[in-house]
Image 1: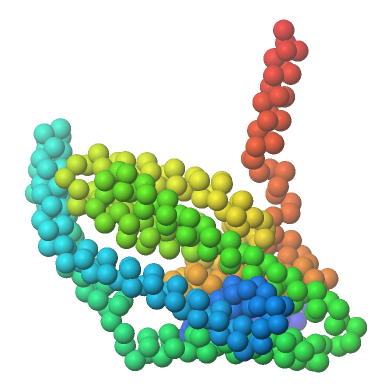
Image 2: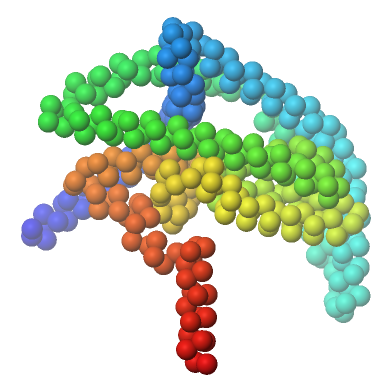
Length: 373
């Protein structure tokens, strides 16, 4: 391949990437409801299949599954909205306590370090005032339904219903446009996508519910005001891998630091969330979600950053399952298998530190020390 041909191909590839990202950014308000609908459809697909095996008509099976999902979302939303309303109504009191905490903190700093904290004090007070004044407006914006929000909420069940009802038709269409010799490969890809997506999404949902309960109980035990609502909100952030729970812990810590008269309470919250992050990363996610994705954490983090840039929070919520789909497609295509290797965990496991590795290292050190004796 000569230099001119390579440059043309590289320029074409770069232009294609730019046009792709431009298109999905411009069409995000149309695309991300569809992306959410596909994910929720895969989440409830096992239950729909179960009902169909029990001789339920497909329409009834899908309708019953959607009804259960809608009722659950309504109950959680109603509970959350009522508690948030109560919390927002106390923002003036929280602001007063936060300003007192800042005065106390600056006074302690001035006693320890002989500098004037006036400028820092005014800056912190202005930031805190802005947080509590804009916070109430933010919650009102989130829960005040616009025509666009209502449309997106109403169209989601329609998309989900149609995806589930016509899923067999979509699969047959894909097979019809696939060359005969590759149909078995496509069937395997579709089966892998359905199995992994359903297991992953169900596992993440269980982890989020578990974390919401643990967070609420822990914050109640520590004595944080509005512990349940903060626990639920920080638990819901765990839908975003890696960053979500960490962000939730930071929010809970800052809220407690600003609104609690005792700074030790905020320290307890920080320690609690460090423990929760450890439990989530090492116990909950590995055992509940399992290794269904097997995607390189570095790729996941890069994908989350790109998705946040392109679609914001909705992008961060949907990107990981769609990366798993890309990995499955690449794995089953010989020409794309190097990309599957790049996305996956193979090639780095022997360098990972896990319990068997630690035991092996400890035993090796013991053997070395006994040989020295």
